Image (cartoon, rainbow over all chains, first blue to last red; front, side):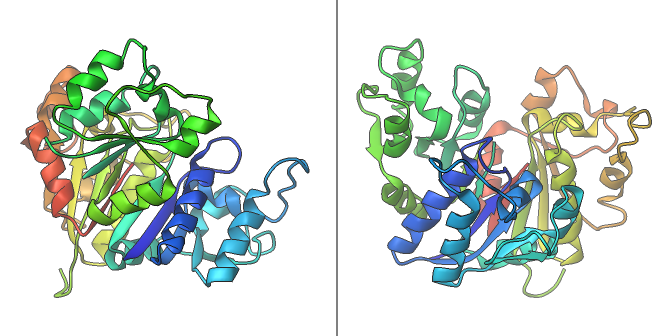
Length: 119
Length: 96
Length: 123
């Protein structure tokens, strides 16, 4: 099955990003395709490589980046939401790219399942 | 439709809101803080048992473990993330 | 609507201004309308409050999005706009207190609308 994942919440403040990550891993393990992960609203904050959590905690951006590069999944960070929050091409980590909201519409059209993770 | 509840029903209306729309036979899954809705012995236990007549009720194992919850309402089914993915293969999802 | 149009829906279930959900939901409606999809818009729970008349956002400098809601049908050709009657009534509101008058539906129609879609998003 072809999955789309929509993330509306930033890292650390809320469990949403962790849940989305665990879900994505489990879906891939079951042999599903993830057509795209779309980072939207505060979800864009998951993409910044300036993130520097304490050493005894998970590194949410690095987890996501590894997932994207290992599995060649398309990660799109909403451009308008990113600009509002000071996220631009310079701070976006490996595996993420900045793109327009139309790419979320494309995902809604293309995916068999679109699953939202939010606060 | 698989209804996903991620907020504690002790704090949020989302669980009761979802029940207004969920038709008989639609499963409901508690995850994140939603798992507190499945605790055995809480004031919500009767409500959970009542809705189990119409809905399969699931709770996400990983989020139970994270919160130290061991006793859940009889009849609520524990699933892990693989189980959750399995449910989404069968159903579209609504994230409340 | 284009020939390959898919059934898509945006559900509003959050009140406006307190959080950004309602605003972003509307952005998605406009985007999907531009893609000429078979689009449905639905207001439930606190989402019905997004349509209340008389909003004044000028003091904060926040964008007033009432005009965009008003433009959905005439400008963006969104014809399927529904509102949950019980959600409206439980908040003491009636259709004439709203800036647009969506078609009233009963709560048992909400899940049916969700099931009909290729995909939907709830804001």
